[in-house]
Length: 124
Ligand SMILES: [Zn+2]
Image (cartoon, rainbow, N blue to C red; front, side, top):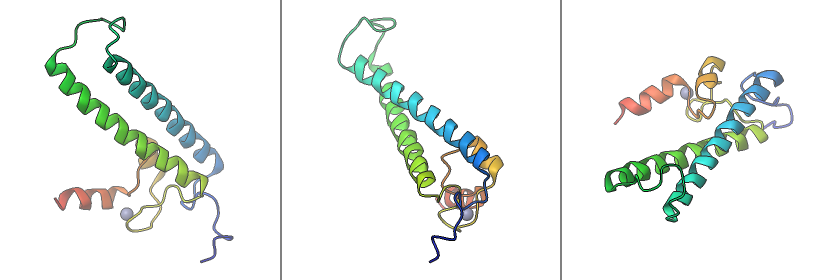
């Protein structure tokens, strides 16, 4: 391995592109953290939140799903930020090829290139 020679980004992204993507990721992280905090608060039973008392059993179920997906996205986003810190961001985990910028712009926390993602989804 020649870690030292590898340039930051691994995927051939410019520092500007990386910075923009990092900003996206950090914003996404803030948003999800807020969301989870909000869930935690409404769970604690304080009713002076937004429209107190509108919560029903059905909504609680939707909440649980939203909370689960928020947590999943948050984990993905944090993993992406960590990869960025290690200079390994933007490379497909499966085929090790760079993930195209236009794909990262849509899904900055992407782990796989579009092709591998498709293969993974079709394989189920
Ligand atoms: Zn791939």
